[in-house]
Structure formats: structure tokens, C-alpha cells
Image (cartoon, rainbow, N blue to C red):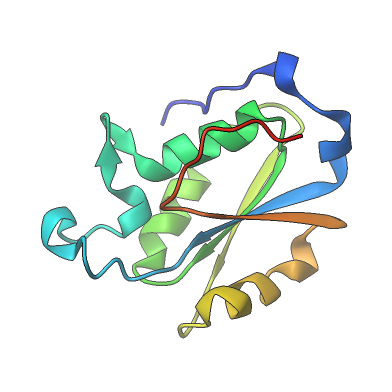
Amino acid sequence: MPEPAAHPETARPWLGGLTAVVLAGGRGTRLAPLIDNVPKPLARVCGRPFLYWVTSWLIGQGVRDLVFTAGHRGEQIEKWVAGLHLPENSRASCRRESSPLGTGGAILACLDVCEDSVLVVNADTLLLAELP
């Protein structure tokens, strides 16, 4: 799997104490007929899973600690996260829901492995803006 793009010139020192929680647990019912047996965050966009683009944006912003929450077809998200090649001093982990927890529940279920500050993003949404 290709390495997410890192842009050291945009790294921000304050991000050292921040964890990005990437919510990748939804069922994607509206998209299901188009993506077959793949969870929505792994649907291909421009030849890569959409989750690749979200991860690349986070890494490009200087985020070095990522926790992915996985629900529906979570084993595929876990496998994808395990195959990531991240920049040095970065880490990615996956928390899998045994039953649907909803947005708030998924966030609460992973706070024990997060840094002091948390940035929550959806795995199926990407807004290309700079973090302050």
C-alpha cells in the first residue's frame, strides 16, 4: 500500500499532543449497491480507497497519531490500517466495535488510547482545508 503523502512544511508543533479519531464504522446503506462488499470508507476514488485520501490529508497536516474506529465490515478496515506505511514517529491503530455504538459511542470507546487533544473526522468526508 502506498505511503500517505506527508508535507513536513505544513507540520504544526501543537499537533504533537493530538490524536485524530477517524470514524469508519457506518454501514453506507445508500452507497451499498455501488460498492459491493466493501465498507464505504474503502470505496475507491481516483484509484485508491477514500480512506487513503482522508489519511493523507491528516498526515499532510502534521497529525502523527491516528485511531480508526471500525464497525460494519470492520475486519477490512483493520486490515487496511495494519498495512499503512506512515512517516516516522507516527502511529495508527484500529478500534473495532463489537456492536454498533453510534458516533458518540465510537469516540468514547477509543479515548483511552488518545492524546490530550482529539480531532474527530469522518472516514467518508473530506474537506481540504488547513488546520490552524
